[in-house]
Image (cartoon, rainbow, N blue to C red; front, side, top):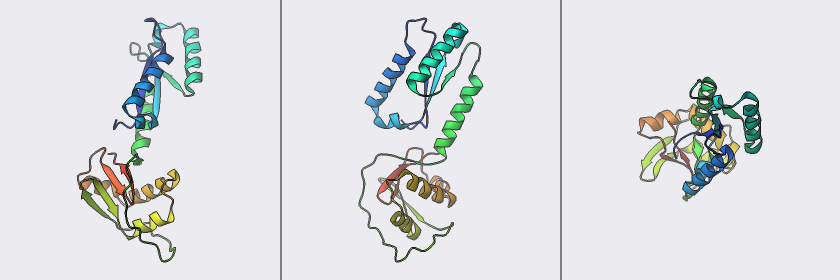
Length: 198
């Protein structure tokens, strides 16, 4: 559940009577039963055993899968090594993108007193903040944090991304790691929480 990206490997050969699209839908259903958060993670779809199909039939099956899933499908073969580098690059790119930012997770909100800003001064690029380790996770606070939260609408994804990127420039991940934060720990920023990713 703490993974950054989901990789679905489907048997496209159908030599065992399996329907790759049906297999994909079954996996998605099982994931949703385990945790709805898993359905929000980026996906990479892989069509394996492509060496067992004639070229024209393979192309037809790939087109069908991509149309039904509305996403690109990477053809691979564990036997011949076809598509191995393409798959590795796709996974690397997806994981790097995910780990470059902290993802919001669904958590119960807490009540924090908000300090209203007296005036809307320009915030500096570099500023200090405090991190406290508590039972419920790590709490990030400070004068500039309060001002950021008062200026931006936290439920908006772009606002959260901007605030997190600004904190990253000021060493948030480094300081959390120094304080012993581990992958999956909860980080509180105002009344919102985020999942720490190494």
